[in-house]
Length: 263
Image 1 (cartoon, rainbow, N blue to C red):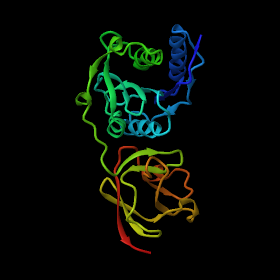
Image 2 (cartoon, rainbow, N blue to C red):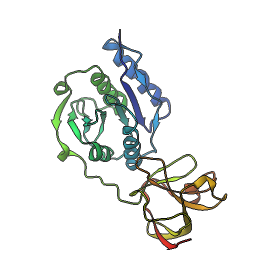
Image 3 (cartoon, rainbow, N blue to C red):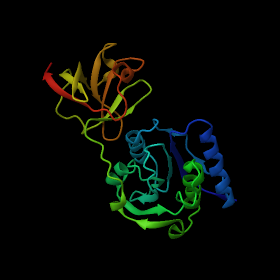
Image 4 (cartoon, rainbow, N blue to C red):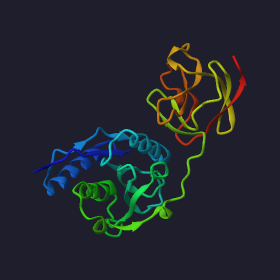
C-alpha cells in the first residue's frame, strides 16, 4: 500500500448520511490506487445553497492548508448545473468542484497553475449525487497523480462564471451569529466611535467600534476587526446566543456603516 502526507478537505453542505457516503467512497477509490490512510481533515461545513459562504470557506482554508492539499467541494449552490471543474492555484492548492462562482475569490487571490473542465460530466455520469459520482472519484485520481489531460479538457479563467461578492456582503455567520463581512480591513475608526448600521441599505441599529469585542458590556452591538483572512470586519451583539438571528441576517445580505461621532 502507498502512504501519503497529502491532505484532503471535504467542503460541503451535505452533512447527513451523504457525507459518510462521500467519505467512504473516497477511501474506496483511493484504495483502488493502492493508497492507504490518507489524511482527511474534519468536514468543512457550508451553509445550504450559499455560493457566498462556500467562496468564503474555500478562501479562508486556502490560507491555512499547505501546498498539495486537495479541496473536494460539494455544495448545492445554484440551479444552473454548471460545468464541473478542477484546477490548482499558484500556491499549490488543488480543487475539485463546479463553476457556480465559489472558486472565483480563491482564484482571484492566488492565481492558477491550471484549470480543467472535468470529463466526468452530466452526460457521462448523470446521477443526482455529483459529489459521490464525480467530484470524489476525481479527487482520488488527482491524489494518485493521474494524467490531467486524461481527466479533463484544459480551460482558462475566461470560462469562469461571472460571480462577484460585493463589498459589505455577509459571507459567514458563525455559531454565535457573529457576522463576517467582506470589506477592507478597518483603518479609519477608533475605539468607541459611534456607528449607524445598515442592512441592505436600511438603517437597523446603532453600534460602536471596538478593538476588543469580549471586553464590552453584555448586550451591546459592536463592529470589530475579526480574525478571518486579513481582518474581515465583524458585527455582533456581545455574548448574544445568536446575533444574526436577532436581526434576521443571512449570508449574502449587505451590511454597511456610517460614523456618527467619535467618542
